[in-house]
Length: 289
Image 1 (cartoon, rainbow, N blue to C red):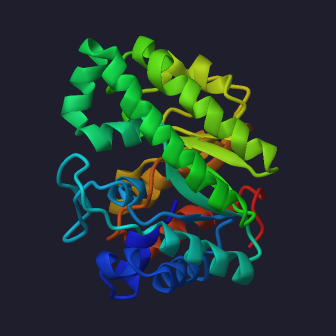
Image 2 (image 1 turned 45 degrees about the vertical axis):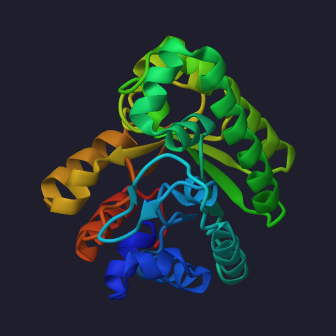
């Protein structure tokens, strides 16, 4: 999961200029793919693209930061994401995934994260209104993306059991994720769901969504759905070859796994660490280089 921030670092660009320019976004993603030769690319600049388009103030330097809930002024970067995806579809011969936010996480951004986590406990109608606003925006955005022939990765980190209870996941996040998965599948595209943190209490529900891939930290969980992960982001950042090998070994003992980092590669990761992970994996004969 090499994304825009690592590519910007390698090409001596700022994330801000890459995140606001579709051509530069495509450039850094293509550069990383040509450097590492992994098997898919993910168009992801930062978590706040949709939230900013809907009025949330966002700062991109020195790193992406959500400054508050939605206000009146917006800055829509979704056309740049779409432009980057179009370029990569033309230039690359591997699957192109585009990241979108899960409606629960997007609703949390719109209301203010801490505030929304209080609202879902005390004011169900208000919580549902934020969810509906987020869902309607994402359905429209998804329609624009799917017309390009790309695949979709839905990132819903605030739906993790590290943040909300399984009961709240079922009440607010599950149906919304199901809607986005179903819409993506009707277009014949692949759909992945990425949720950080603890998903053990909700793994059964995630497995029922019908997604093609679950990108999760604990790939030892038993699911019918293909899992993606295995190597920790701190492992790839710090680059201890023995630890990288150990995590690759453990991951590839499970036949139902796409080997990957558990989340996007930290921006300042030395390229040799990523190459080490790919080299070790290729020794299993599962990947031809």
